[in-house]
Structures are given as structure tokens and as C-alpha cells.
Image (cartoon, rainbow, N blue to C red; front, side, top):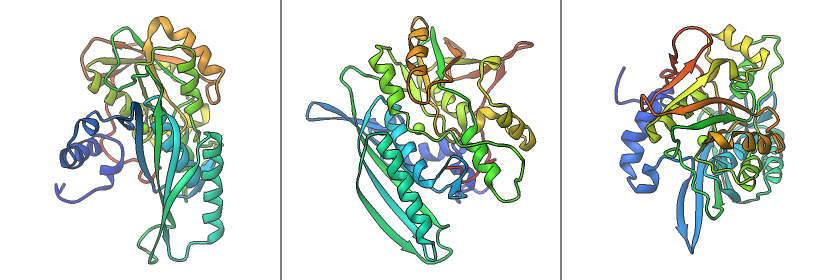
Amino acid sequence: MSDDVILLSHGAGGQLMAELIDAVFVRGFDNPVLRAREDSGVIELAGKRIALTTDSFVVTPVVFPGGDIGKLAACGTVNDLAAVGAEPVALAASFILEEGLGQSLLRRCVASLRAAADEADVRVITGDTKVVPRGSADELFVTTTGLGLVPEGVRISAANARPGDVVLINGGIAEHGMAVLCAREGMDFDLDIGSDCAPLNRLVAALITAGCDLHALRDPTRGGVAAALNEIAQQSGVCIELREEALPIAPAVRTACELLGLDPLQVANEGKMLVILPEPQAERALAAMRAAPYGAGAAVIGRVLEGPAGRVQLRTTVGPARIIDRPVGEPMPRIC
Ligand code: MG
């Protein structure tokens, strides 16, 4: 493998992407906020804590069961704000359009982005449009930037998971990745899988309102639950143990993963939030999540242990715990 060209794996949310981000971007732009590696950068401004995040979306196909690139662009950005506890304040949306793109498809995606932003109670207040020659992009790429406000007293960080905490998730895993993969040409499994793509700011707000002492949150997108929990385990210097029988996985998703040889823990979600907080608050958090939008399937899926630091492991009903690594290669390019 050459060390000087970009591979698809560098965008997969796994080990190679983490190395590229560290070596090129964190080092290149070096500052304490970026070094914290949160889903949004948080700064103090005029006595307020402001969150800023940006994401580019290159999913193919542009329209998939359960959503399209516009809905994904709004939800992905709102959820990265929510992962630091921030309420969205405003969005920016930039479009790179390929010459020849049908305007009806563009209008559909803009309407979807608008609808998801409305649901999250946030507006797109600025944007940009570029058109590139046929072949220089694939239909359309969208970049969304989100500005948010962190409520007073909320200090959520991927470095704050502590032994004695539990790990919760708001429902079934691997649905977005499998919906997109099954929608691709040549994948005509007769499985009814829709993306879980959804804005989760109200779910997180419900946890904060319920008085939960949220330690760490992360939306497990590219690289799935495996990548997100490995990041938290490393940044917090703890071990995270999942219970296999507690993982919510829809039967159709499980079947699709088996057919394609994929581990559902490594498959992308776009409407899920991992929630880590002290064990005595688990019931309160479950009740708050189940009463909130997109929280009906909330479950406790694991716990935080002191060590081995930086490790994620899966406890099965039989045998020893299995180590859950981040994905290294690229089973699913252009999933979001
Ligand atoms: Mg994220």
C-alpha cells in the first residue's frame, strides 16, 4: 500500500481514517478544540458555549429507502451538534452539482433537507452552489455546517466515560448502512430495510431536561457502533463492554449483514445516539428516551469498565469476551 495516495478506506470511519485525521488535519490545524476530537468543536463566545460542526455528504444512491442526501445532510449535522448536547441554532448548506443533474432531483433533496431541518427546529440561513463538468462529481454532493448552543451546565465529552457508567442506544443498529447497500445496483435482496436517518436533538434535549448527568454521547455513523465506542474508550481511557444479547438488531438487518459478511457493529447508523451515563441513572434515561422522538427502542447495551483502557469488547452468553476493533478496510464506500 502506498503511503502517499488517498484510498477509499481513508474515508471509512475506521482505523485508516483516524490515522489520516491525526497525521494531516489535527496536526495541520493544531489547536486544543480540534485536539479534543468531539463531534462538534465547542468554544466560549460572549459568555455562551457555542458548538460548530461541518459534514460533507456523498452518499450513493442519492435517494435510498428511508431518505435521501438532503435529509441525511440535515440529520447528520444536527446529530453532531446533539452529541455535545447543543441545540441547533442555524445551518449552512453547500451544493456541488454535476453538469446534467436533473433539477427535479435537486428540488426533492432540498425539500427533504428543509423538512428535516424544520423537524429539528433549525433554519438554513446561508449556502453555496457550484457546478462541475460531467464526471467531476457524481450527481450531487452536499456540505452542511451547523451552529449550536450548549445549555449551561452541560459538559459532554467523549473523554468523560467513567467506570461504573452504562451504555445506552435509542434503537436498532446498522439500519442506515444496510438500507443504502441494499439499494445499490445488483443488490436485489428482498429485504425491507429503511434508513434510520433522523434528527436526534429532541432526544438529547429530553435527557438533559430529565436531569441526566450525561458523560459521553456519540452518533455511531461511519464505522458504526464499533468505531464510535472505540473512540470513546480511547479518549476516556476506559474499557467498554457490550452484551451481545442486548444489542437491538432487526431480523432483516441481521440477515442482510450475514448475506454480505458484515458485522452490524461496524455498519453506519444515521438516527442513533450512544449515551453513556452513571448506572444509577439508567432507568431515568431509558424513560426519557422512550418518551422522546426516535427513542422507543432505547436499551442498555453495555457498561464501562476500568480496563483494559482503550478496549471495546463483546460479552457473549458463552465463552470469553471478543475484542471489537474499529473497521480497518472499506466494506462500504460512500454510505453517507
Ligand atoms: Mg458524529
